[in-house]
Length: 303
Image 1 (cartoon, rainbow, N blue to C red):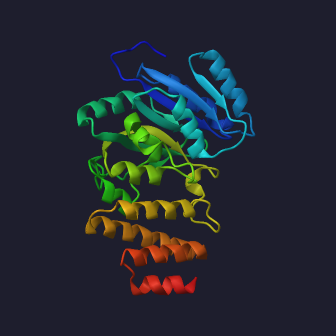
Image 2 (cartoon, rainbow, N blue to C red; image 1 turned 90 degrees about the horizontal axis):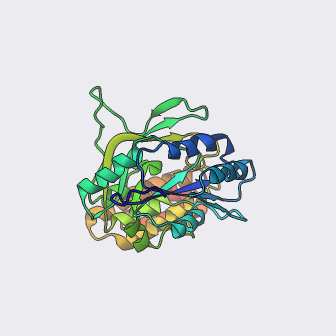
Image 3 (cartoon, rainbow, N blue to C red; image 1 turned 90 degrees about the vertical axis):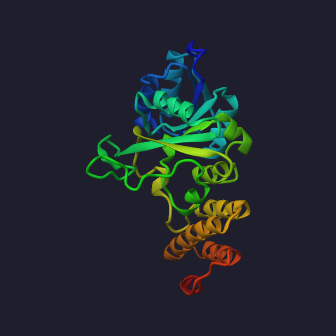
């Protein structure tokens, strides 16, 4: 741990599962951070490639880094919680080791937290999407000819926004420890974490945008973002569970309308990919929201 007591400690929980070909670049990006007060916790989720050997080498070279080699694969939510419980930072990064942190990222995001106040539970940023070879694909947010984000992403109290649409680049998040502790960490019954975190955290905490590009998100066939909305989608049931949680958290008609829009979109994807049991559950959720439209009924009936 670096000696910078006047700066808040940032804990990087670096999660690895079969990332050997990307791992050195990812870990070197931790070493390149300009922010000095870092705690690094390496968690390998029972990789079957050469990841463990690479992690051991880096841990030996940097003895202040923690290394946890899990004996069996437990999934992202449980693996993160394992690392989170070992951490001490005021701020937490959930860092997938197929991605890359740009050098100024944590310096910029900690400064953003200082600007926006103590009710901010998470700062997120723009990201550059790269391919397996590290080549530029596109940016997460669209920009106009003057380089301005279009449309400008939501900041502040964003509960209805996270229900209505996907706009946060998950790898860019810097989370406040107090927010994660209030939630009890990630929900380990789910197959993925970000939508659930956004819904539960944004109910009581603000989210704020740092418009800069701080992270490179890698696109490859094994990445989680490439597995959704296919037959037997492993994440759809988790999405439904989060929508059910969101229904219990909604307080206004506008929030329920935002959730209905999300559920309707998920219903159409479920029908498209013939995930029929899940489509029926989503239709029932629309019914509870009193938001069923004729096309929703027709879609559910075809499945």
